[in-house]
Length: 234
Ligand code: ATP
Image (spheres, rainbow, N blue to C red):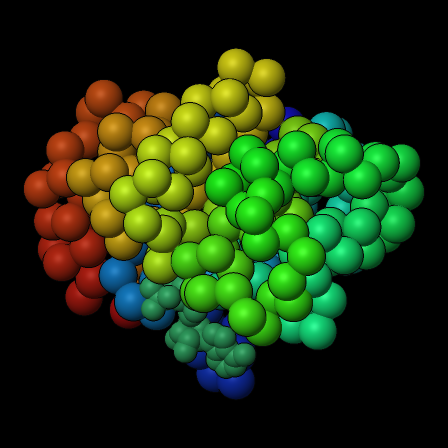
């Protein structure tokens, strides 16, 4: 379980996040929506240990995290704006590198099976720089889930994916739910996001302006929160 309490982040004089609190429950997908600049990526980066909050706490399974500790990293998988892939290494070499980082002992055939899952088996031995953007995003998904993390942080993970990869990611989220893992999904595709989410969080100018079970929201109601609360949140 992931618990966020009174999280704030200030850049210069501006709050990127202000007093954000929520819980991401096991076996559920939390859809995070909000307009440009709402603080979604800042939130994901703080949870991933890439950025330090100005105030507030983040706890994983009841243990407060203070940054990018290896024991925290083992529990989380991140797909963000950056793929965290090494261009000069091949697809399989990238996975091997991350295995070492996570202390995993996965053999070559297991790594190839992971690439097969994301439709990249035939490109396993090509340097990442030769893969298309969507292929790199597929590989980023394989990398992020390599260590079977209990918490998955996905910031616009559908970017660049074709229809078959979208279906693949949808089924990956369903699998994570069945495994009792928590997923945080940031997306601008509100309609698709609502189909996948169990719970919803709407951020506007760094603050939570709406939250609750996904059934309580429609795509229109989510986007109307962006507009109607935007001025108030300033
Ligand atoms: P988008 O939907 O456009 O990706 P977002 O909701 O992910 O937006 P963030 O990227 O978290 O928003 O940005 C929130 C606010 O924090 C914005 O005002 C942004 O300009 C500011 N911000 C983010 N990162 C930095 C930084 N490194 N330095 C200064 N300001 C920053």
